[in-house]
Amino acid sequence: MKLDTKEFEAKMNKSIDAYHNELDTVRAGRANPNVLSRINVDYYGSPTPINQIGTISVPDARTIVIQPWDSTTLKGIEKAILASDVGITPANDGKVIRLVFPQLTEDRRKELKKQVAKMGEDAKVAIRNIRRDAMDKAKDMKKNSEMTEDEQKASEKSVQDLTDKYIKEIDVITANKEKEIMEI
Image 1 (tube, rainbow, N blue to C red):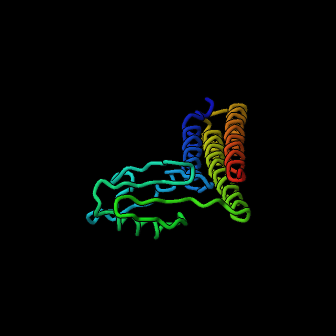
Image 2: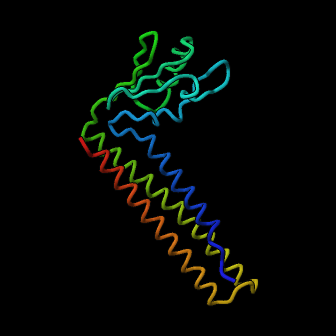
Image 3: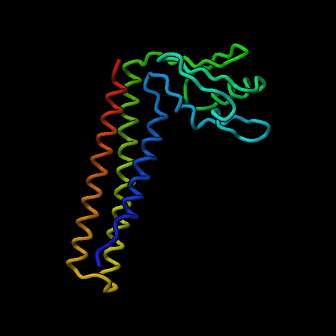
């Protein structure tokens, strides 16, 4: 009986999704509403995501406009953005909050590129940890006589093939993000 790799493939897919979500929060000089996805505003005593208390729009490549449905939340949104790691000072005109993304400097681009490379390595480590779990499970099944040595080798090969596929995907995603960061 060969090892069923579906559960490990699902975990690897989740790791790729998590990596995509993490990359979305990296500011690449363009206005991307996803940089706000991790910011919560204190809304009547409970932390609430910005997109649940107002409309977020991107009128041009360098600007995000947040228009809250309740104008009393403007100060709270402004405070939450300032306290976050977005690194942009919000402009509050009493009706909406504007976030203007400055052109990235060459040094900042290089820093972001390193940050993305590190995130890519972390994602690869997550994939390799899943591979290790799968390999351990195959060894345990062999030890418990649930599979033969040939089945164990075949299982390990299919797990390794799966790992290689996802590592390659992470490399492609990382390269695309680095290219996006280095564009002027």
